[in-house]
Image (cartoon, rainbow, N blue to C red; front, side):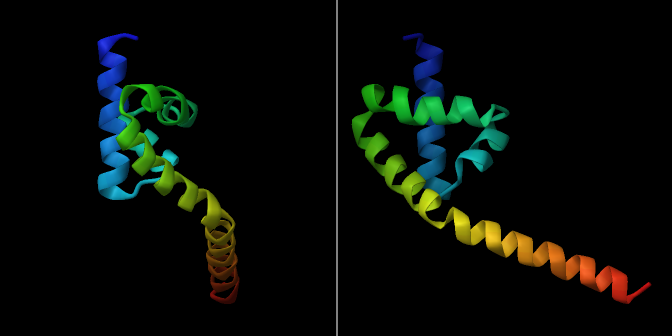
Amino acid sequence: MREDVEKRCVSLGRYIVRTGATVRQAAQAFGMSKSSVHKDMHDRLRGIHPGLFAEVEEILRYHQAVRHLRGGAATRRRWQMIREKTQHQ
């Protein structure tokens, strides 16, 4: 594997562990697509740095477990904002 890809994987992994970022947040911070971050974290990092992979995997599993809660909260905020706009008109 190319050295720059390996460095990117490790940098992404460290960023996720340090900040607790989601795949989407990490992708935005590094200017990458979500699928590239996902591929780097799930496929490549395992072979490059197994210890870091275990830490990242734990964080990403947590995010996956609570994503339905975040989606519900975002929908609730959206509808509250819509209601407030219609009340003020």
